Amino acid sequence: MHSHEVKWGTGQGGTPLNRERQRVSLVTLGEAAGLIVQPTMERTLIAVKSDGVQRGLTGDIISRFERRGFKLIGMRLVKPSEDLAKQHYIDLKDKPFYAGLCKFTSSGPFVAMCWEGQNIVKMSRDMLGETNPADSKPGTIRGDLCVQVGRNIIHGSDSLETAKKEVALWFKPEELVEWKSCMEPYQYE
Ligand code: DAT
Ligand code: MG
Image (cartoon, rainbow, N blue to C red; front, side, top):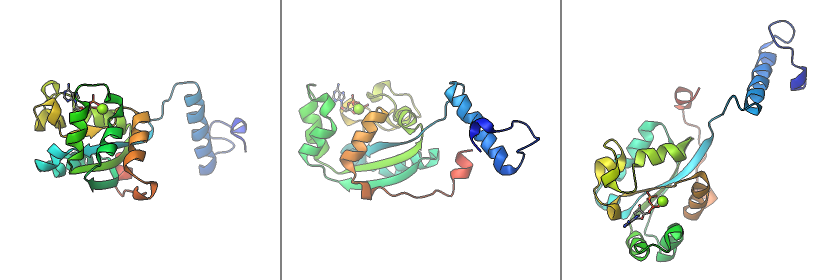
């Protein structure tokens, strides 16, 4: 049966399968009309930078993402090459702090992680706080755990497009693990 042939209501087509088809058709119609916006499942790059690792904050940071209900699908502890650090921060290449930033980043250790969840790009940026810890609200990672912009302990992709690029920069496809979380039915309806 094509979706436009679905009989609405409880009469004909009232089997569970048809009811599910009707629901899907209604959602599709709602989306097309712009009435329903489905949140998207996204992936993002979160990294504990060398200052965060040195200060023993890796566990706290991972814990916040776990407790929020996001899913870890990739993790690597690395000492990045200076080239990789430069590539990672390429958008900032004209900033006066670029060289120092890349040098500091490549000193390692650096914990690169890929996390997955609905709307995770924006939600994780909110969890990080502002770039400058001094502007970050208590309760955020930077607002709770650090003081200065050059030692702000964590990286998070700032848009979906950046996230795709950054996850690909730090992870080979086979380093990302597809797994089904047993918590999912209690996090997403
Ligand atoms: P964010 O890490 O919040 O995405 P960004 O991409 O603008 O911020 O900058 C990347 C990193 O560069 C940032 O986490 C710390 C460093 N940085 C930014 N602005 C700086 C500044 N004014 N002085 C020193 N380091 C800075
Ligand atoms: Mg950034």
